[in-house]
Amino acid sequence: MAQDYVWYDGIAFPVVDYKPEILKAAHEKFVVKDEDIMLVSYPKSGTHWLIEIISLIHTKGDPKWVRSVNTYDRSPWIETESGNTTIVNRKEGPPLISSHLPIQLFPKSFFTSKAKLIYVIRNPKDVLISGYYFWSSTNLAKKPESLEQYFEWFLRGHVPYGSWFDHVRGWLSLREKENVLVLCYEEMRKDPRKSIEKICQFLGKALEPGELNLVLENSSFQAMKENKMSNCNSLPEELIPKDVKITRKGITGDWKNHFTPAQTQAFEETFREKMAGLPPELFPWD
Ligand code: A3P
Image (cartoon, rainbow, N blue to C red):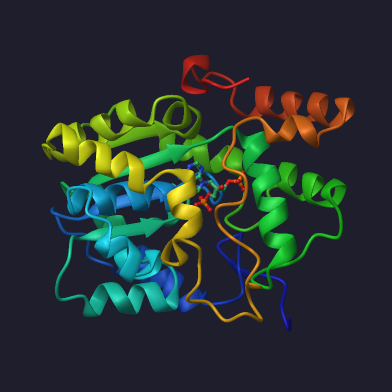
C-alpha cells in the first residue's frame, strides 16, 4: 500500500475509495433532501446490521432485495468516491445514505434539512476488538501489527475515522432532536424486536406482526452471515480476502476475551476523561 491513510482535516481515512476532494464535496456541497434517511455510526458499531434492518423494513420483511443488491448499493456511503457517485446517479429505491463521518465533516446541508438520521453506538471496547480484526485482515488502511499496537492507536484516535470518543460525543449532542434517533448495539442484541419497532415508529412505517417477524428473521446474525450481499462481497479479494466477513462474531463483551487488566484500566480512565459530563445511561454496557 503506497499510503497508510488518507488524511483530511486531521482525521485518518482508509486509502481505498477515499479522496480529500470527495470528502470536501460531501461536507460542503452535498445536498441532503428532506426525505433522506441517514444511517450514521463509528465503524464497527453495527452499521451493516442497521442497513439490513432498514432495507427489510422497506420491503416489509421480503429478503429478495437484501439478497440481490449489496449493502453499498442499497445504502451508499456519502464520503466514498463510489458511494457518492451511486447516490448522485440513483433513480429509484428508498433514499438511504450511510456515513461514518464525524459530525464536523458531515454534509452541512443536513443541519437545515428535515432528513431523519439514525446514529448507532456500541461499547467502544468491542468496537476496538472488531476494528482490530477487520483492519488487520484487510488492505483498506494501515494494518496494525498487534492488538497492543491497535489499542494504543485507538486511544489516540489514530485509526480510520479518528477518535471514537470525539465521534460519539459529537453526534450525541444531537440526541434530543426530533429527527435524530440514537440506537445502541447492546440494546439491539438484547431485544432486536423492540429496536425494530423503535425504528419503524421513528420512520413512520407500520408493519404487520408477520412482516415484523420476517424483518427479525432475515436480519439475524445467521441470516446475514449467509448473505453474501451483506458481507462486503463487492470488493476485490486483494482488498478484502474472501474469508473476511462483516459478520465476525456478533456478540457483546468480546473485549473480555482480549483486554489485559492493565488495558481495561487504561481504557476506562480514557473513557472517564473523554466522556465526562455525559449521562451514564447513554452507555448501557459493562
Ligand atoms: P464483531 O466484529 O464484533 O463480530 P459494522 O457494520 O459497523 O462494520 O459493524 C460490524 C459488527 O457488527 C461486527 O461485530 C458484526 O459481527 C456485527 N454484526 C453484523 N451484523 C450483525 C447482526 N445481524 N447481529 C449482530 N451483530 C451483527
